[in-house]
Image 1 (cartoon, rainbow, N blue to C red):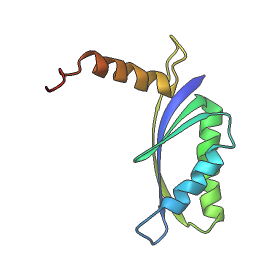
Image 2: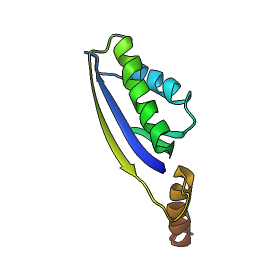
Image 3: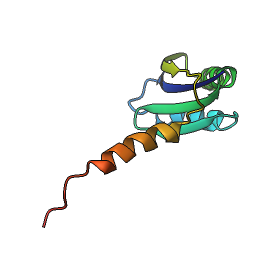
Length: 107
């Protein structure tokens, strides 16, 4: 079963910035057979359920192995059976609707 997940990993590293840890997670995610799309407050993941959740587990394991003692992640996940809808399909659908209702250009 395919799924789409929105993952936000928050490592408690004692620092204000967690960019190094998020970059490390991103490198881990790239090793899996899933589509990934980084955004301002997390990462969208798309693929087979087991592969997506294995990737999330691997992120936690990698950060723990690098010395992060505590990690809190939020995960939103959705599935559908009527069609195979990828991340960019959802974004494109909204962008099409926005473009259809663009205000007139200012003179």
